[in-house]
Length: 338
Image: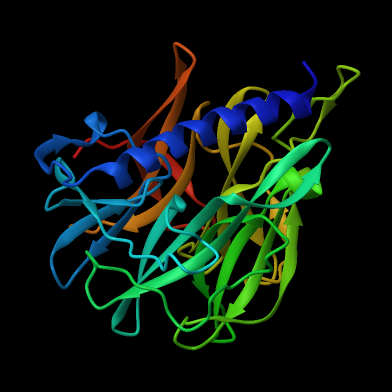
């Protein structure tokens, strides 16, 4: 099968599942809140965990727009609906929500997520119709929401599909969103940054290229002639500093049909790079979209989801790995069991 067709089938299958879930959630009059749920019993893509010192609580979100809470990482309570969008905005009344993240900043909490309005089409590339989709930011006074819209109606261009926005304050002291410009339109996904207003209520200027999917030495796929070429997908950026002060970025792509996470490091210690890609991925096959957080007992953990197909359906489950950041680069110690 042609690599573009295979990637498109993977993408459309996952999109369809998330769309169905999104509409089911919206249709529910009341969400059933569960307690004492082990993390490996939760079905969640793109898990992001905020360890909130004020409430001494872990908050986990991701794709689907829901939230889980835990005091010990062992068992969780949820799901809670926390995102409140404007039905009159470009998102429409029932946007799909992907890869939500929670960031504490200057006394408030911010919800970085990808919103998709399937009723609006922005482009057709190689016969594929592309929905209106973009990274966006909501705000709350509390870690468990509700998260509400801010000043700017949109952060990124309406004619570009963008996703997986994350947060970083660079060495210039300015806040930025780092996001993916989706391969469906440019056919070689990119990682980009855009400056944010001081209160994160909107963006400043235009996005800037950081690197391309084809820069990766480890991701690959087959072209129409059966030759190995770099995979075109950029997914799930997350920024971090090592113990030596080195700036790194987690990001995810594919090795043929396997979802895998790699890491890149900035030679200048700033978002502008240049970004040097590690030669090998850092997770086992079919683990990815990772982020890092410190536990209340000062361990550094990486949250990822596992990715496998069961009877034609993708099943994604949160997993934790312990990592070592004390040196010059990120080292994965092994699976972590709370």
